[in-house]
Image (cartoon, rainbow, N blue to C red):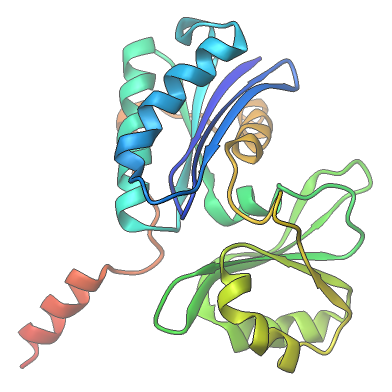
Length: 235
C-alpha cells in the first residue's frame, strides 16, 4: 500500500510517502515561510524522492484538524486537489491522534498539547497496545490545560507530553502534574506527516477513506472572526 501524507495543521509543514509499511521519504519544514509557500514544493519533492508517482498512491492522507484554521484549509485544499487529480480516496486523520502517533514503545499515557490560544489546548489522552498500536483513551478536544491535567492525575500513570503546547504550558505542567512525567524530544515533538501516514494505513484497512469532495476540516471550535461577529450581533 502506497500513501502520500500531508500535514499543515500547526507550526510545521510536512509531507511523507509510506510504501508497504516503510516511510520512503519525508520532508519537514518549520520556519517563517507560510505553508502555502512550502507545502506543494515539498509534496513534489517527497514523491520524487520516494521513487514513486502520484498515480502509484493508493490514497492521500491529511490531518483534518484541529489546528491552525489557515493551515488546515491549505492542507485540505492541497490534499483534495491531489486526490481528485489522481482519482484516489482521501483519508482525514485527527491531528492530535497523528501527533500522539509520533511516539512508539512508550509504557504509559501520551498527551499531545497544541497551543489553541485563549489559555486552551487541543489535546487528548492515548496509550500504546502491546503491538504498539495507538489506543485512544480520551478523544481530541479543546480544553483548558487544567482540565486535561486533572484527567492525567486521576489516571495515575507515567505520562509523556509533546506538541508545541509543551513550551507554552511547561511551567503549569511542572506545577500541577502529580504523576511521573517527561517531555518528548525535539525530534518527535511537532506534527509529522510520517505519523499521519502510519495512521492512514490503519484507517484505510478499516475502510475509512472517503471521496475527496466529502472532506472538510475539523476545527473543534469557531474562529476568532466568527466569535467577533457573534459578539457584534449580540450588542
